[in-house]
Length: 309
Image (cartoon, rainbow, N blue to C red):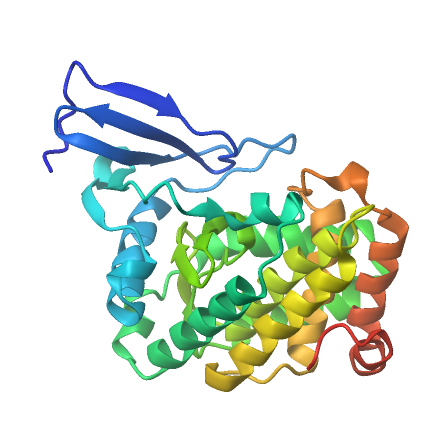
């Protein structure tokens, strides 16, 4: 597709984009999604990131398509590095956003199992492709969009936890074993039962596979703490996700995973990008869990019977 847009085209902005401007373009050439990375993110905090990360996302989508199959990733149609824009195919309307489905209390165990399997395959298959390590060596977007606003911010706001969080960050940055999506959460997964399409690879990098698992489980756990949420069913979905990841994935669900999970729970409460359903949570209960997982990962995971199947 030619990246020059038809003058008669119509654009529909999509809501919910924090780090990018995302629009559906309807033109004489067909409909597609246009994405442009932002230099300042749409949050209350002064949160900036280099929009050149758009080129990382393009490469990430292309490599995920190669590793997992094009059916699991939108096809990139064109990219313009100078303007930090790219176009990708519009995913079939039968697919639903997994986050929105979960917030409607539509919990499908088949979907959770498929998501865990895909993430495990991404880590295992990329681990066996050492050429990806140099291609995705740049971790600056990950540091700008994850380490500083999440881990460093909660350390600043919780001084007693700061030494433990510093050690966790050190372990994350010291571990480099796979291609990491970096934003593998329900909001970036379009689903139809066992079919899953993965979006948003702008912080893709060669790094610690534990992070992706912890990131997704943190979002699932948070949804289980909503008032009137079907908590038992969501916990079953977490169990299914982790069981499937263990079958095909790269890393064990060990202390490193548990401590990162604790940090990410706190980050979505007190970091620069809190979840949009914060008012529907018992915040003190979630904070207690996150703190326990950071400081006492082994005993907290066993006592809670939430995490390791």
